[in-house]
Amino acid sequence: GATLLLTAWGNLRGAFATELEPIAALKKSPLIYLSPILSNGRQSRCHAEVWFVHQDEEIFIVTWADKWKAKAMRRGLQRARIWIGDFGPWRSANERYLAAPSLEIEGDFETDPKMHTALVEKFAIKYKSEWRTWDKIVKDGLAKGEWVLLRYRISA
Image (cartoon, rainbow, N blue to C red):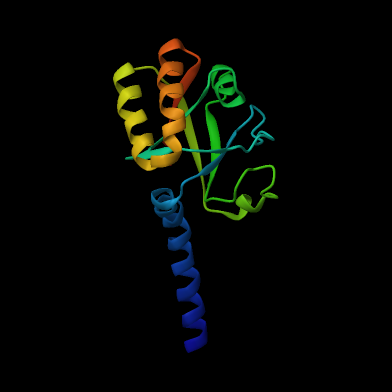
């Protein structure tokens, strides 16, 4: 009786924890690993780690306009999967991030210069010392179209 009840409670509690875990992890993690979802429903082989800003139910990343995440978006591959946590560079992470909390997201390009400015400021706050190297590069790159800001919504 008691063992069965405790097991049932543990399973139920685990189900809730799994559902809430990714959002809680987003608030703490410095990195996400992002993989566009291909038209056949499979994840891309590119699972690059990226800096991100989580705001409300959205996730923002900046990247070079000619890199895979931006190219995938231009090709209509707007869905992606993210894994949340810091496992270092994806090539040396030995796929450990695949066991991390994950979410499916759907995105598009954010083209509003006011949003660019506001979000670059949020990146600067979140990544403090690391961002000093990237601040001018990203700002100039966004202004010239060499960089893009991607806005992802957390899928239900």
